[in-house]
Amino acid sequence: RAKALGKGRYAIFDREMYDRTLHLSQLEIDLRYALERQEFLLHYQPIISVATGRLTGFEALLRWQHPKMGLIDPGDFIEIAEETGLIVPIGEWILQEACQQLYIWQQKFATTSLYISVNLSSKQIQQFDLVDKLAKILDRTGLNGKNLKLELTETMLMDRGEKTIELLFQIKEQNIQLSIDDFGTGYSSLSYLHRFPIDALKIDRSFVSPIDAEGKNCEIVRTIITLAHTLGIKAIAEGVETSHQLAVLKKLGCDEAQGYFFGTPVNFQLAEEILVKNV
Ligand code: C2E
Ligand code: MG
Ligand code: MG
Ligand code: MG
Image (cartoon, rainbow, N blue to C red; front, side):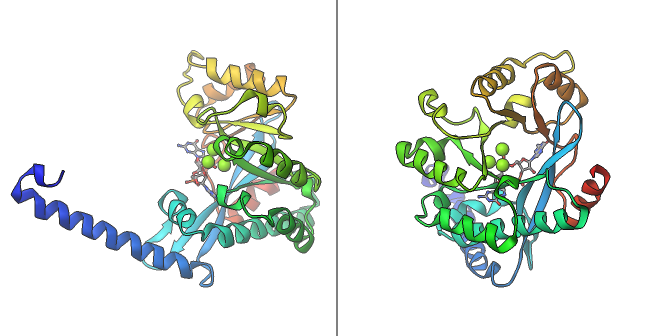
C-alpha cells in the first residue's frame, strides 16, 4: 500500500511508521515501570440522582502521570495495558485505591450511601482469583461491598456465557454491585441479560449526546430505560452535557446521570469538595 503512493511518499510513510512503532514501544516500556514508580492516579466523576439532583457516587477513572508526556487519558494506554497483561496488576491497584479513597471519605464525612464505580477489563474477569482478590481488597480497605460497583461491558459478559453468570453470582455474594457500561454499543443477548445479577445499565454517551433541546432523538434512550426497568434495575445516563438532555432524561424516568453537565472527572481533592457540598 505504501508503494502505491509512489516512490517519493514511500520513504516518508515508512519513516512515520517507524516513529510510531518506536513511540508505542517506548510507551509500553514506560508502562511496565509506571506502577512501581507510582505514576498512576484516579480521577473521580460525580454521578447524580436525576430525581433529586443529589450525588449518588463517583466513577473512578484511571490517569497516568507520565514523567515526560504529562497526564495521559486511558484511551492512549489502556489497550497496551490489556495486550501486555499489565492491566491485571494495574487493575488491582485501581480497585485498592478506589475502595480505600471511598472508605476514607466515609470515615471523614460519616456517609455510607455513596458508591464508587470501577471499570473492569476483560483480562481481569478472566483471572481465576478475581473473587478472592475482591474479597481481600474489601477486607484490607474496610469498605462494604455494597459501596463498590463494578462496570463491565456487554462484550465482556456475552463472550463467556454460563461461566460469566457463575462469576457474577460469586461477586454478588460479597454484596458488590454490577453495572453494564456503554450499554447499547455492544451485543447483548436478552436471554442472558435477564439471568445476569446486574444492578444497572449505563446508557452509552452516543445515545445521550444527540438528544436536543426539543427532546428529539431520545427513542433509544427511552428503550434502554424501559428495558432496565423491565429487568428491575437502574438506568444511568452517561455523557450528559446539557440541561435539555437532563430534562428529557428526567421525563423518561432515568434514575441516575453522569457527564460534563454535572462535572468532569477530577482529582481526589476536588472530588472531596463536591462530596462536602452533598453531605
Ligand atoms: P467509560 O468507562 O465509559 O468512562 C466514561 C468516559 O467518558 C471517561 O473518559 C469520561 O471522562 C468521559 N466522559 C464523561 N462524561 C462525559 C461527557 O459529558 N462528555 C464527553 N465527551 N465525555 C465524557 P476517560 O476517563 O478518558 O476513560 C475512557 C475509557 O477508558 C472509559 O470509558 C473506560 O472504558 C476506560 N477506563 C477508564 N478508567 C479505567 C480503569 O480504571 N480501568 C479500566 N479497565 N478501564 C478504564
Ligand atoms: Mg465506565
Ligand atoms: Mg467503557
Ligand atoms: Mg461508559
